Figure 1 (tube, rainbow, N blue to C red):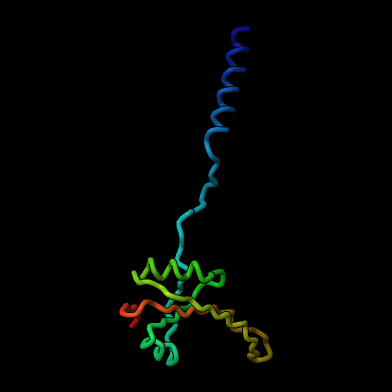
Figure 2 (figure 1 turned 90 degrees about the vertical axis):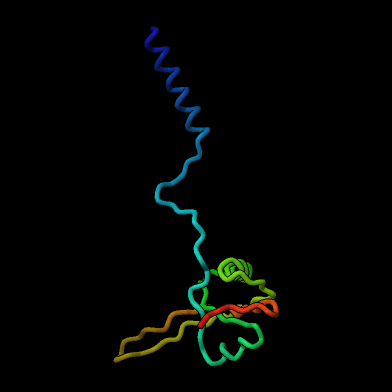
Length: 120
């Protein structure tokens, strides 16, 4: 009889331990990744450098808040405003096979006057 009571007590203890410990899935990373992929370099984008505006290619799931936080963290500048432009997918045909260019999302960031981002 004493053996049966001991088994029941150990089962209760393990059940209580499972409730207290949070369950975390293996292989899940909680590290934040950058939403900025790379700077967008074109003639029009380079003309905007004088007005303290910089253009970046960003992740498709990015929004204004995440872009602002990422630019401030990555480049150490104060961001005044962010404008986001989505470029839709373009369909192309090559030798009778239909394909397309992927979607893009660009963010134009305006920084505080007197601050610069060194892109080139």
